Image 1 (spheres, rainbow, N blue to C red):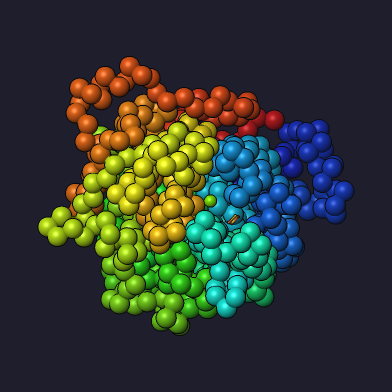
Image 2: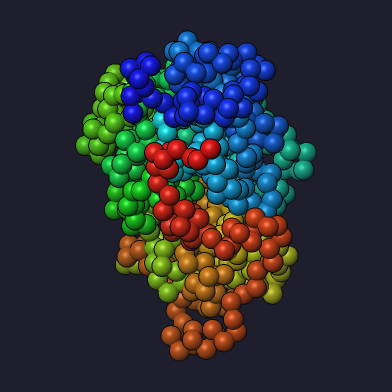
Length: 592
Ligand code: FES
Ligand code: MG
């Protein structure tokens, strides 16, 4: 709609501030903003009002420096002729929120939808970092569909401990094995953990945070090179400024998430995830983002489009290095450039820069071949997620890039049966049960055992917990056996280096096959065929159904109840059932 006064396209904020039929309402909307220096004339002038969705706080320490970066964003917005309005989002701190931060992704999504829809905002800068802050923000931006741009906070500096690079999260999984084996003590454990986190920023490994920020860039939702700049670097502040400027231009050009988030963009993101050795959490989050973007992405797309892509980034947990080296090597654009040149990327996708992806990647070749490998000389072939199914679940994934040579030799290399493993299941109901019993000699766990955890999915936990990367019992660790095959209906941390079969859907609490598995059953995993089954006959499985679904904890908060009543399975992104019916809601202004 064109404004008669200015001859320009009328912005949605003008419906609040410049509504000539309702001066009484405009007055009420305007007056309180004056407290921090905005004038009525300015707010009524048709300048774009740009929200800064502030995800940083003391409760989200991984994103906390966005509180400072926002000043640079404001400068950028102002200099481009816009008006910045900063507001908080629901905090999500991956490591600290109980019973799991995953419970809060959909809550933060709901909150942000209400803010973007119900307030006079023409566009938004989405500040992201810690794991779920990125998907929740992009999910909301799609539902509302106002111009939006992602500003990552960036990873921490590289961590060093006793001469070794130590990466966030990954150091925990590795140190706890050493602790159990008795090679380090509690103090050394704590010191290694502290050393892995030497500065502001999110996890410096290619865990879920760095993965999701990389995928936001791969989708075309942030400026080129944004994801990998370490948080304390000078370039991070410059990126914040340029992102603010660009947000204003996006509004003027009316470039919205729906113009960028196509199926091709999501397939690009799946491929990038393989090449960076990205987190298994990318699977539910990307599915959720696609759902809200109205894009048909199937669970099988991970196998079809992602599995054959090789591992190019030598970054922990799949490789050796951390965020700083990855950034200096060229970061996400250099990875995408490799994929593009190998014909594995759709370069035509539009992006928030106003240019196509192929234009963004001009001159972005990797500058450090030790860290970012050429497509033809990868660290590992076929580094994507293997999609598995069978009578235990309809869908689960396995991150093959972290399968070590030792694990492959022990479990997957029997002559004539390569990729096939049969083992005896030991089943745990939730992580309390695992911790209580893992060292119980009566379980008779040896290197042929498959550890199974259930009750850890969206309904069971609730929220779906990162517990599937279960550590073997101490007696095996002392013998140098650092991982056993594991299966579960929960997730695992993106920083974990365990080749677990996870995100199993439907979960046990929803009556999936895992509910009917018993300790002592044989499980057969066939990686070539993509099958995972309990070797139990159908009649026996039917008999076991009379025992009922294993119990899970009761709802502890109102949101837990609402979450359980509405959530879908991990295969589908664990979104709020029905929420994806709401699309582009900003096209119709809310009543006043
Ligand atoms: Fe927040 Fe890893 S815990 S980014
Ligand atoms: Mg995590």
